[in-house]
Length: 341
View 1: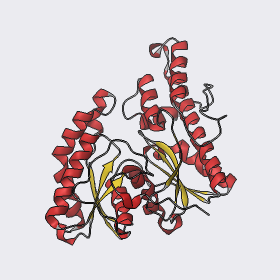
View 2: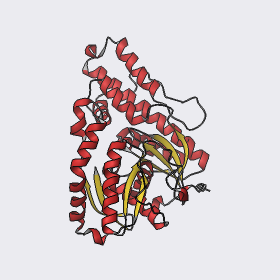
View 3: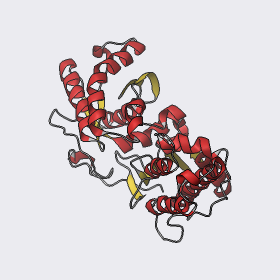
View 4: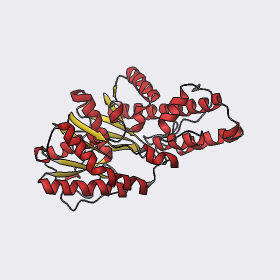
């Protein structure tokens, strides 16, 4: 749960975050019921903290944005219900934001004018792995997506296979620093397939098979676990970079924004920058605090919509899954995105 105040859609005035990693860690992943209950406890305090840090009252705000989806509906409904009441009580323009649009716009907040559209966006998180063309229009155009597991989901599952704590991304990266990324021959997903889609379920299975071949987790010493972590991390990073390079060539783009929780991964950052230097494009990453879910990105995306005259009313509902290029709750966003040309 998070809240933030932005000025002009780019300048961060305040940002308050209530994390839930400690709530879910004992279970090795997110428990939806616990997540929504914790949101109920935290929402009003987080909003108050953001306003206090900004030195503002509700009447000082020009508008309000809230995540409408995709995500866990229980948690989304907590934030959405609070936002509706807050906007109504204070007479504020109100807009629902697609979660992935928030991630993409977070890179614009970090990159400033250097990342003004058009550009290619790579969203890599626990629930999503996809490539987008981002133009001046309200919605980006999807170029490719994962066919099964998201990259961040694969990190969490492989971390569990290796006996590591949740969340898996940071745990694998830490262990991988002690390992050899070429020690274990793991597949590079979709490397021989055309198009811009991703796949990570097979890579996860390959790690599981390798652990079993070595006698199970209990039979692995620390160096073997580190080698597996490093080899897995390298396989994910290389597959993401390969697809990104293909998208940049296809779209004749000069800038790519890499966003989402996995964008905090050090190997992915270094590999993407190396590819950019080789291919002639610039890779822009948000600062670490804007990689994982946050309110700054939702406020920034909401500002873009409000500036275009987009508004929602109190009938807006939460949705668990919907492509970013579709907005069934808002017909005015259905215009086709422009090209990078």
